[in-house]
Length: 109
Image 1 (tube, rainbow, N blue to C red):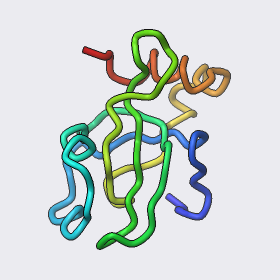
Image 2 (image 1 turned 135 degrees about the horizontal axis):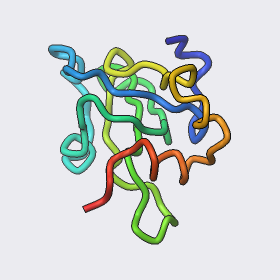
Image 3 (image 1 turned 60 degrees about the vertical axis):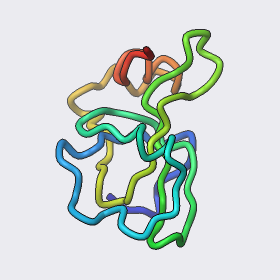
Image 4 (image 1 turned 180 degrees about the vertical axis):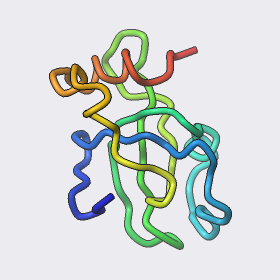
């Protein structure tokens, strides 16, 4: 995936089914974002922070129940995700991020 083409709140990704060994070593990230990491799920890149032992990409995996805010936001290395496959899910292109996460993301607890 070309990292220069990733845009916050626009790029949709699928997290790798298995995390890369040591991909997050050296990252200084809050516990909440590290605990929200989920293998094999879809999400929307919502933010990016360069440095910190490697670039950190924040990916939202769901919306709050009122559909007003992103939730389950995990911190990832770029080696831990790939672009969401629109060819296999052509209807996803017409969805906004809220609809996308409600259909392809995880359901909030």
